Image 1 (tube, one colour):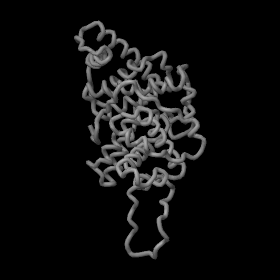
Image 2 (tube, one colour):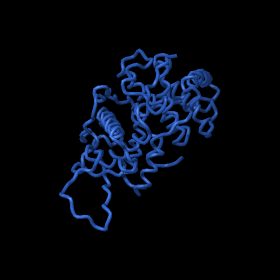
Image 3 (tube, rainbow, N blue to C red):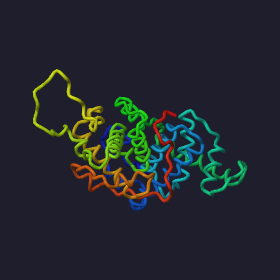
Image 4 (tube, rainbow, N blue to C red):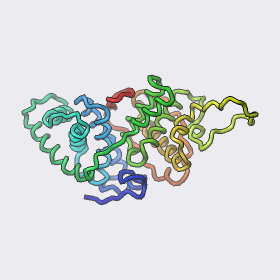
Length: 316
């Protein structure tokens, strides 16, 4: 097993972008990213077909990415790892499913046909899930805790009074799609949630609204000369609500900018993705400070149509 270590960040599961060039896989980075995206696609479909709660599916998705920071992709097929992540999540997230049921649905999706629970293919899949689960437990170091950006996004949406709005729905979709990239390996849930919300606001506000740079600037740009103070408090800038809500500093804002750029690259790679990309691809990415832009790889499009655990904010 590779002992690729995370550099000093906030926890052992946050890696700098350049760590993607040092994963255990011998494949070119583009191929690895492509298969990661395809694996998450399969994982989402498997979890949805098993009617798992969103929290379990997203936990499994985070484990999937963490696994391949410790083990090579060429040794463990993405579908087997996805199935093992889903099966383990059904146990840790208290939404138990029988191993046979997970294996049956997994094989049905791989072979594109229904299978009897006692079929040879299902029996073999059960064994492979258990074998891969052993490696998964080793890779995770029995650390099952995952905090997804969705929990932070729910808090943000409620604080802004945006429940049930299109902004909330679009931000929720962006948060799902963030797992098709490697964002969860690089940035905290707050950073990803803020990036998804800011991008959703930009999409919903239209092409003539504030740029992403203006929305994530360290201080709101002045549009006029200062006016004498009044007894009324200044109205908050709705376009900067996420940035103010999380009270981000300069380094945090740089991470938000990088996250936005990665999300935009993802959508540009698949122009028909969930009918959102036609709006997203026209948005200019923020000016990212520092050398991270040169280290960020392009995110390829998955081979199949997309699937998300759910299409709108929900707790289950």
